[in-house]
Amino acid sequence: MKNKDRISYNSFFYIIFAPALLLVLFLTAYPLGTVLHDSFFRYDFITGAKDYIGFQNYIRIAGDELFQRSFRNTLVFTFFASVLEVFFGVLLAFLLYGSFKGKKAASLIIIFPMIISTMVICAVWQIFYHYEIGLFNYVLRNIGMQPVGWLTDQRIALYSIILVDIWQWTPFTFLIIQAGMSSIPYELFEAARIDGAKKTQIARTITLPILSTQILLVLMLRTLDTFRLFDKVYALTGGGPANSTQTLSFYIYREGFSFFNFGRASAASVITLFFVAFLAMFYLRRLLKEDD
Amino acid sequence: MHQFRLIIKRMLFWMILLSFLGLILIPIYWMLNTSLKNPREVISSVPTFFPHDPTLENYGKVFQAGIWRNFFNTVMVSFSATLISILLAFLASYALVRYRFPFSINKLFLIWVLAVRILPPIVLAVPLFNIFNAVGLINSLSGLVVAFQIYTLPYSIWIIYGFLKALPIEFEEAATLDGASPLRVLVSVVAPLVRTGVIATSIFALILAWNEFMFALLFVRTPRLLTLPVVISRYIGEYSTQWGELMAIGLLASLPILLFSNFVYRQLTEGFSMSLK
Image (cartoon, rainbow over all chains, first blue to last red):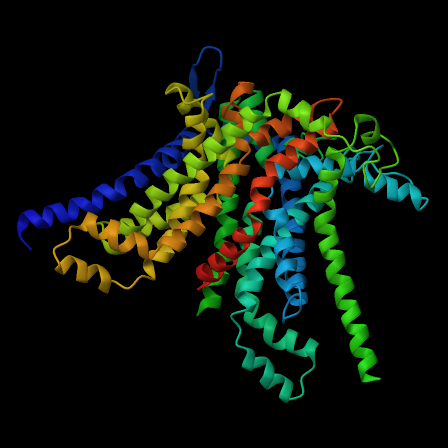
């Protein structure tokens, strides 16, 4: 290649790469830098003055009962939602394994929840959970039990939100695990069956071990997604009752957008980011090990 | 005896499957059901499984309140966001697959993009709000299109990167030997070859953008500019909620996606089995 051609060849790739690179950096690198920087400052919203205060924001947050509560709630939500979603996803994938009439229609219906807007889902569940007109309490009353404050009882509200998340995202875990299942060669089952293995045995000793990578992968994706819980809390409970559904994302939102405590919001963001990175590393290490 | 056990098993299978499908369909049916009831029937403490006196009143009210405007906003924002993401992702992914940038930028960029997919978006919201405010992107639909790139761009880059990576280089080499410029190769050789993959990716991106809530809530305040998810959240938040109208909007917001669900399902399953390889 001639020198001039070489330059134009190189610049072509720089030019087509630049827009995405710049946009991604503008939307993420710069804000993240700001967050890290702001977490060491006290920010006066009215005068716009900034004071360097070291780790003060972090210390204040660590001692903040609401922050601790948010952290705990987030962990509870993440754990139960992600584990149960994966559990039901595996269950559904096993149920729909093999061919039967109507399989396609069934799979199609199963994906509905994951493609509908979270807000629409929250709206319907808000009616279900309604104390007076809700379907759930109607059923409870009919079988002679006391109605429950699904979103207003502080012992229950978080679990009610978990249930909505399970309804919405089990289809996703199902899809990925189903895709993993369909890649298992059929001969493997045939061979096991000829050897006289029972169905449950085959599931336990052949299918599940092969699926372990997919299960781990989907567990990671759900863990990281549930960890950012915001929409459902905003729509269903607003963090209440008595802060029982406060999550980290909601805490940051309130500090930043309601109280304009940018310093504290930033410090909470940094802590959250560290924890997310820790979670991601935890799973990735295992995933990479599985790959070998 | 054997025959008998087989029948029992079949019945059990269908019972379990149908109850799962029921659990999925009941909320969606409830939306339709409630949207066709009159306000008095909705707040009855004995929920009715069919509207006793079906009415389109709720839909009428919703349209009168100007829901078309919000529907149109959602369409504009999600389609523009998708278009931009797909275009930028296609160009960048091609560069990443076929060209080695210095300082292992290729690898670093892909890891960075994956990290963006993982981080809770609220973390970016506060500083982005201030930046957007400074450049006049708050309270505007174009601001939302830009903000949505946080979700749609990393996602599109990863998937399209996967498709391009799987592409054999021979076609491009042949075209280059025939004297085609890199741009020409990209447009008339590479683009047609990954068309289906790109379409699948745009479907996911479109759903992501169509349903996005957080940035739409935080970055737009004027009622005229709101997208459907935010309108719905406002209805939910009201003290005496207009359930019938709320359900009517919910159904209208879901209908475009549900109508295409067959297509979406096919793309999703293909997309996943691709990305798992």
